[in-house]
Amino acid sequence: MSKFSLALAASFIIAAAAPAAAQNGPGVSATEIKIGNTMPYSGPASGYSAQGRVQAAYYEMINSKGGVNGRKINFLSYDDGYSPPKTVEQTRKLVEQDDVLATFGQLGTPTNSAIQKYMNQKKVPHLFISTGADKWNDPKNFPFTVPLYPSYTMEAKVAAHYILQAKPGAKIGVLFQNDDFGKDYLKGLKEGLGDKAASMIVMETPYEVSSPTLDSQMIALKQSGADTFFCITVPKFGAQAIKKATEIDWKPLFYIVSVSSHIKTALEPAGLDNARGLISALAYKIPSDPRWADAPDVKDYLAFLKQWQPNAEPNDGSVSIGYGSAWLTVKVLERAGNNLTRENLMKVITSIKDEQLPLGLPGVTVSISPDDYAGYSKLQVSRFNGKTWEPIGDVMSAK
Image (cartoon, rainbow, N blue to C red; front, side):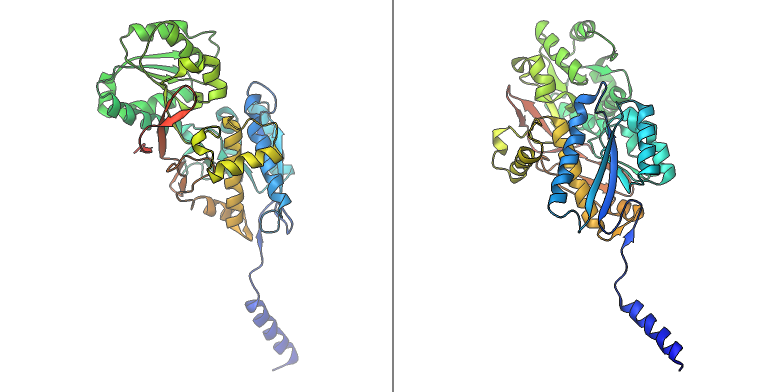
């Protein structure tokens, strides 16, 4: 055998024995993982931007400890003002100029709707988006878009199951926001009630986000004879509905959707005494609740905020959701190891099974499979006692 042949054979043996080289996708180097998102740091939804600030702070904390498998996270978060055209512009910048591996944790139904087709055409993972619209669970048509928020339809099914158990002869009045958000909840309620929906729902009345008050709708709902109220509102209107029910002395079984269950943004403005007795179905712990004072995940969360986001309100849902989203993002990047390609990222994410997120209520877990991106399928039905939300029974499934 010639010297050349021997050398060539030796090189093949060495190559075969060497470990596989790291697989790097866009935005990934030996020292960095570049990811991004857009957030409403200005504009009408700027109150939710705490989510983005907490995400950024969490990644800073991870980087201070050495990053993910030796790589630092370079997180780029741009202001979209909750304006879909601006979301498109800033997301194109992330993908085409910044060359991010993926986007994580973008907020809002209209904003994510504006980029969903683009992200999937580009085959860029569009992950853990913060919106509960039903349409995000569509792996067949949009395989790169994955939500991380309990779906509105799923929550309404849980609520329907509770109503059927607690008040099987209920006469239900429904107030709903006249958009996809409200209609998803209404659809889920009817699906959860099944063939009893037509007889149990005695009134459905919409409201517009431009409406100054809900007075006429609330009076009509009381006059309908409804003894159960399903209130599909955002916090501003949730507070109005709670106050008005007290003013007109209407005392139905009052279910308020989780979007309006936040104590700071909905219940305090309504008056905590007025909110006493409300029912909702929840996914997350309230950090200030004494029952969680010794819970390790709550202690870790509060310690993180104290050091990395001292001005954040611990009980703000946007803060806790941003924390959970960033935590799961880091877990996924860790599990991807040295195969940091977009394809492998999707494989890792669609293999999540019964993941207990920090601040998640016991038994409320996340599972994402190649055929089902919904994430959540169980919630904890709870009652507001004037100070905090108390669990009612065990977690309840939407199925």
